[in-house]
Amino acid sequence: MLPDQASVAIIGGGPCGLMLANELGRRGISAVLVDDKPSTAFNPQANATQARTMEHYRRLGFADEIRNLGLPNDFPTDIAYFTRFARHELARFSLPSAAEAKQRIHSLSGSWSAAELPHRVSQKYVEQVLRTHAQQLPGISIHYGWRMAAFADAGDKVVVDVEEVETGRKHRIEAAYMVGADGPRSMTREQLGFRYTGETGIKRDFMGGRMYAVYARAPAFYDVVPHARAWMNVCVNPERRAFMATVDGKGEFAFHTQLREGEDENTLTADDARRMFQAGVGADIPVEVLSHGTWTAGHSLVSNGFQKGRVFLGGDAAHLFTPTGGLGYNTAVEDAVNLGWKLAAVIKGQAGPALLDSYQAERQPLAIRNTGYARGFADSLGLFKPAPEIEENSPAGEAARREAGEHMAAHGRAEFNIPGITFGGRYDGSPAIVSDGSMPPPDKANEYTATACPGGRPPHMWLDDVRSLYDAFGFEWTLLCMGADNEGQPFASAARDKGVELAVVHVPQARELYQSDFALIRPDQIVAWRGDSCRDAAQIFETLLGARMRASSLTTQKTTA
Image 1 (cartoon, one colour):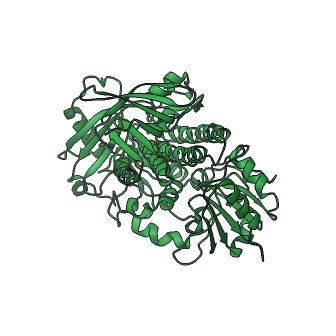
Image 2: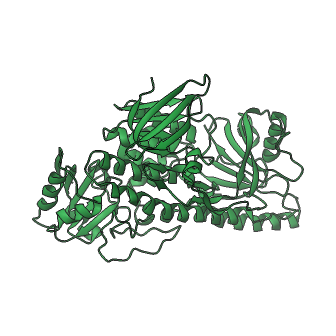
Image 3: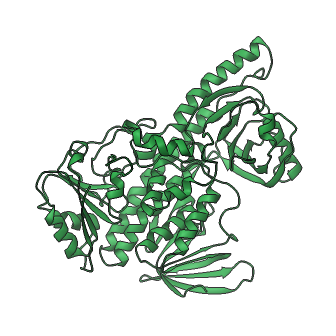
């Protein structure tokens, strides 16, 4: 049964809404989620979970569960470029399988020093895990097959009217806050009066304009393709440009092709979809079309507002990407991570409502940054035009393939080796950060320099063969004590006074990495403050949490890492 009341109403059951339900439920905050789909996604949709997202899944305890989904553990996650999948290979960017990622992660340093590596898995599998874990949490109520009909911010609450899709049955929910994670056609965004800003309608030879998605089953693919297996397959020829993600490693694929002049999306059938797939393969193999439909590439859009009163936006409702770089779904997950702890802190009375203002201050610039990176990748891929003779068995064809291969090899390295984008997002200037006056390294897509400059991801290190520093962090706030003979007692006392859960972790081996005796880590694993003295702990918490807070229960953990 749908509840009549909840602390938070979540509109939309994609990655953002489901992740928010997990963040809230883990903190004891009640939430009701509605989505007009019958269930979680059937189509593969997004196919790349970035390393930062995997670190958040590790924080919630199910990173290994997700890493075991999708492709077989030994399936390579290469990105390969072909004239057609069964014909000439042009370039390949090799990446580890899931099994190799688990082994390699402990020996990596520099830009890829992390608790987790990326994982290539279709969104439909991820959503199932997020839903399973969320609905096991007390106070979380998830209802697919229900849509929001209307909402009103009453000043002290949000009144949400929902109706069952099949029957039209109506229900009213009262919540302290509402989050619209209801996709690119967000009714929430429209009613709030916000609009997308940025670039749209961009036309490219590929990845710009109308695209056609085909979810297909074709086990014979591996019988006719003479090349090594790859997770992402891209075909480059003048007739049929496409990219195709491997869904299960056995014969299911998510195939996306640019619609060409004369191809009317309104009249295309499953037979047309089958022929498109076969044209990309370059062989007449049996194909079962599981679903097919159109979508538009060429968006880099961000809402001009993320919050009004008690209502927030997240995920595709707040930003819309062209999928190059795989940044849309991952940005949506981090929206939920950012907003979840803040809503919980305010609802529990640990922080003032002003803390919620930091959500837009932090996430809107990140969305603009990430959509910009995705646009650049789409330009690199889509503006390249293969020579007409690229498929010829001739000297001219060989030269065309060599030129295309050089371009695609460089593009693959640029789009799929992105530690700077993955780890380098920052919240500089946020009211929920206390600056120490230091300057972060330049923001570079393909290079990440670890820094404890407040506002970014905490520098990572391994404590032993299997334990990450991130595993020592508490679920809420964490104080890293890295100097000699100092317990950080002022922070423990300030946290106790304000009802904030604080884990105190002694990790002297991280002193050189963090360049300070202390570092305070937020619940979303962002460096909130660092320094060599704790004497201003009470004032620091006041600043970070936005307003005076009332005391409540506290669990303080002391750990030697």
